[in-house]
Length: 141
Length: 297
Length: 134
Image 1: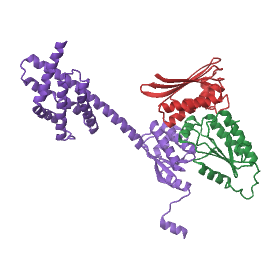
Image 2: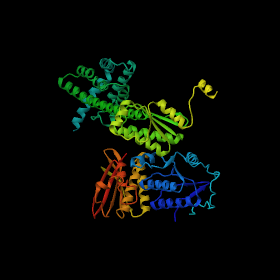
Image 3: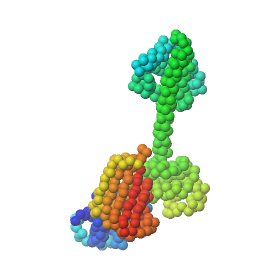
């Protein structure tokens, strides 16, 4: 089954959507991420959508759901790389993605995650629970 | 049929002959007539006018001598091309439509005088010649005006485009801080262009803060306020912060009166205040050098 | 209004919705729409194609390149023979949803278009036509 890869980098999970997703693929990503967050105890999720040419209300809902689910699982979500044309269209559509943090690019997004979680990404902060030994294989769920 | 065409050819031949043989005198009389119309401006030199006039007489002579009756035909290509160039350049130089059309029409009087005075005797022939010459010059005059009109329209639409782009300059105030000073009335298309160029620059420069300065905006209505809000929202979505500055007291009252919900949009009275905030948001402060020394002491 | 090009594509699966988006995109590029306008019309098409699939049980999308008085544009028609919409005004209200979206589909598509036309009759089906000018 087709899947969007989820990469792990220290305390953070990184997802870069590079394909024009159909709805089921988006739903799969949503549940995959929830599973991975709880498996790895990740503290942050970076969602790169710079390659997305459009974000419609369904993808918008997926993004809000990912952010909401992550928060419940004690992880911060930052969405990075929303293109100008996509941002204008989202506003016109009436979607403002409330409660979702955004950053211009991956670098700024990572900095935002580190700041928000108090982790620097690579090394576990003192006193944090050790990460479970799950593999980095992106397709593993 | 052959007779009429031969007759037409001999008639046009007479006009062509006058244009050819009496061209020097005709040119002087025509230039004198044109100078009367153009005297107010002087944006064209006497030499230029003379060379334009001489060229036109010569082209007109050739075209008429060809015997072609319709000025739309290929024999008239050179004449029309010449008039189109003249008309375009006059439109750009700011000549009035009257001044441009008079280039052709002012040739009537001196030409008709010479057609009347020409060797050919009887009144009927003279009337025919004047009538034919008049038809040709009227057609050419109208053609000149049409080209003039089109050139003006092109000029105006190009200026509108330029104005639209000029009116939305995105400037970099500091590393990571952009400003968009808006001047004049904000309509949908202007705000759209402004929003697009601002967002594009944010991506290109990786800026964290964008300041939308509306000091130069005279009034704000509901639609404008909504456009501004959309811009702020789009900037937020991309992950940067947007500050609106330069909201004048009347505009502030209007916004409240209209019931526009600005939500959590950050507003500052002046561009300077907004810039100070932007600096602090990006982890910087501005201090006077002596004060700085004192602070550190 | 003159139709320059017309393409009818099926909307029967989620993959078809993706295909509609891609066809609309290339048509918008060919018609010379700006990037922002391309994005708006593709997004609107995505919303409407999803409605056709999810609420209408599938149907067709007619994608047309049109010209009117020198203006070029895109006209998209989504048609299904599904249950139809009982209350059209309500369906256009933001936040109203019968499916699993945000309820911005129809209203959003309307806001992203220059012209919007909705025909629906209970039990017969739904037809939505949008036009986006260059």
